[in-house]
Image (cartoon, rainbow, N blue to C red):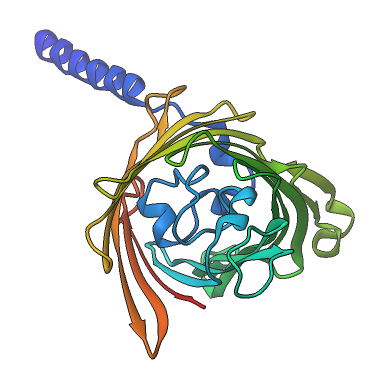
Length: 334
């Protein structure tokens, strides 16, 4: 009997130790505000592992780097819808346009200056949250909504160098009378070392924060406090292999929340209609317990009534979800 008890206790102790050592190290950034705004933007960006800060070709958005808007060849209007688990939703809208000043219509002369404007919205939320009273009885359902609206402006100071800034407005509706707003900005630059090789640097969420006030709901028991968004620094590079119509991008991001992410993306233009994409996001150099997020996708370009149209799809693994992320996008070029 003593031997059997000893064996049982040893087995329980062994499993207890395994539980302790198997516990993954959590990242500080997971509990910081604005998590929805760090998941990426649209099917193209997410399928490329969100390594888009130095990619200045194709359809562009200021979300990744505000300096990119001045490289958009046509007016791009893009939308995106995500299929997510756990009653979550995420939707995207973007308009990007380049402006050329000092260029005569119909001439081949270079413009005196080139600027860009990009406007975008990310809408995110969770629905069908069960509301229960103190006895555990269901009394209704709740939903939350978190939104980002940005306006990006950029200017080409030369053929090789562009600077940009994005002004960001956040709105978070959490529960009944509890909501908050926040303002911040992104700063970005991109440098063309050659026709094929680009470098970029981005500062994200400069001075972004939420200010909460719960006194309307809880009266004297409520309080006010601020939550600051993590400040991120991004260093990126991209290269275009013209012979194979293959572009690759890589970027490293660090934040004051203790994260150091590596991202990579690869895009292959098979013909004028079809593009294949793949990449990975959040290879956390500072925390090996953070699961990597591989992604893949494609784009199909076609003309509809004389209007250039693009249909996009992206797939991304979500490690802590019941099923993975699927994003579809539809864009037009005018």
